[in-house]
Image (cartoon, one colour):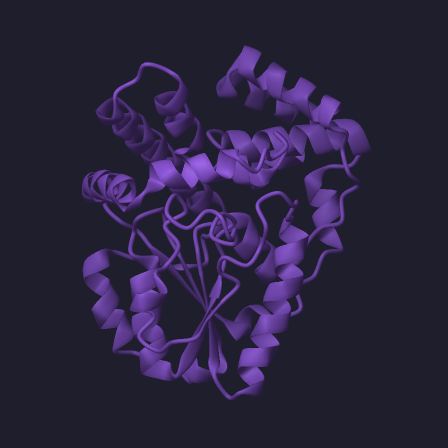
Length: 302
């Protein structure tokens, strides 16, 4: 197989070593790396987003990292437009685009197209989230299937994020997500992609997350959050969802010890990694699932 003519996609849970593996692939096939992580786009969020360090790029071109202002909104559609443009630019240089990140929705939009659902009012969306919180995921999922049974085909019973989205779309637009997706197409065919998902064992991943949390604090995560808070960013901006911001705020403004904050950040990150893995099981079934020990073996195929 001619991997150099493909678009390489590399995903996996947070702290699974995606960025370092992407660099190895890029060096092997003369590729350039394009960011597919929704937090690593922000200028002001280098440490908490675990954005790759330019000193470790190993002369490999990296795109769409740290370019967007945290005070401004940025959607999946915004990313898709930029990513499609960068893919073409890299291909025009006779190089291979390598997209790497942990934002599943970005990859879904790239490979399947982005559905153009009407904007749903924040007040309405919050009502649905309150209902989910009240019922819990198990009962909410049952309620979703009563409203839209077709959701059963592609939404995992434990996937709260997609369950909420399917419910609010059906309730507000009177059309299911499946109906909206029917006429949605990607700019590329499935044959254009090589899809790699790094499937890290849970125990080892937890250890990596704990180590990375310590490193983030040592590198200046507290100062980064201080500077971010000075910007007085509106509460609805996505950047404020980054793990570590609320926890460090607690350290700054309440009587909480730093070790306690580090533990809270690690726990939140582990929970996020679990959600990523759950999402991947339901949405990345066609991807090559590789254990860490299999990565070098797979690399030899390039």
